[in-house]
Image 1 (cartoon, rainbow, N blue to C red):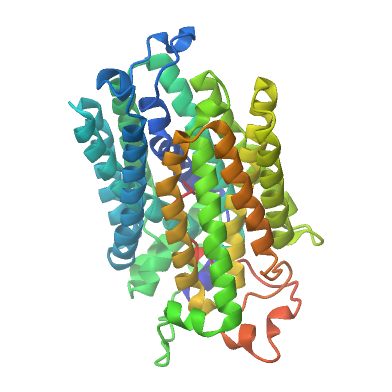
Image 2: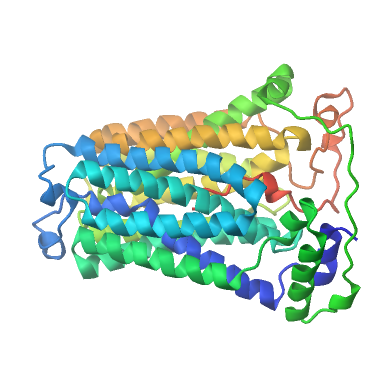
Length: 475
């Protein structure tokens, strides 16, 4: 049997796999803390609120009160490092293995995050944060891929979405840690230390990916890990015997040119590029400017994180409802976010309305962002799926790099921009096909041929191939 078939005997999500997955969930908690650290560390404390009177940040220590652009620049540099890390270490994990790259980037992330607390100027702090972004970007790739490759395919979609809930929990935890410590240097050191502890524990208990080992010809090691998974799941390990995979000489490498060569695929790609950019831009814009939700920095941040959890849980349920599916759900959340932002423009002067509408917009865009990973992987044919999602996610990172600077706008103009972009996202989604209950296209001809099989209903179709799904938010 091959490695994929072996998981029928290992189990999709047995007790040992649940144990291993818990470490990945914890790792995404610390990843969430690092992603939004600048919300606290780069904040200008509201001294009229008792809980912020003694809060020290890089703004107070380096006298950046009149230079808000510096804190926005630091966050953008972090996201730029994150983008480079995803690319560089993502390739490295395919060559050297998931676990070695996870160990390397995990240790370097912790060191860089811890050392940021010793920065003597905002420039040295910015350099430290670039390295945190670089290493945690690579760490995030290895984390998500290794987690899914230890599970059966049928669990990839749902576990991937639950995984994102723990990112939101990390945002909430950062708020609590910051409230207790009140010193940006200590906050950097504590969060950096926690990152190191969690990732070290993960590397101790979690094995290498049996799927990666199998794909690189290390059949004995792959079989050993698969048998261990089966044994600790309470399954019969003796039935697992791997054989070498069948190799085909006619496998072709595809590029973005192949996507643009076909009108249908080109339109879908451009639509996805816009939707991914908008999702990242609005999501991180609302997250990084948490003070917009509440005058209290800690409350604003924790609410921003908490609201994401029901958003993901709603998606998990509704995306499988036959008359809703991925496309209609994505359209609904884009429309809802757009309308909410437009309404908020006229109610900025009412604190309660501003809070409620801001949280509603965050819920909608978080749900949309969670959905787009799965929906994108189901649209494009297998030969072009990786390049399509890679291109789309690159533009998402561009949106994340630009998003910190939206805080320079007033709340009214900010919500105007968010509203217009998400309403356009709703219209763009109309150009995309429905995928629920339909087989994932395996060839380009299935999509662009005269009689595409893409439209054929296949209720028995298996889960999506999440190898090609970008893992960074997940994060």
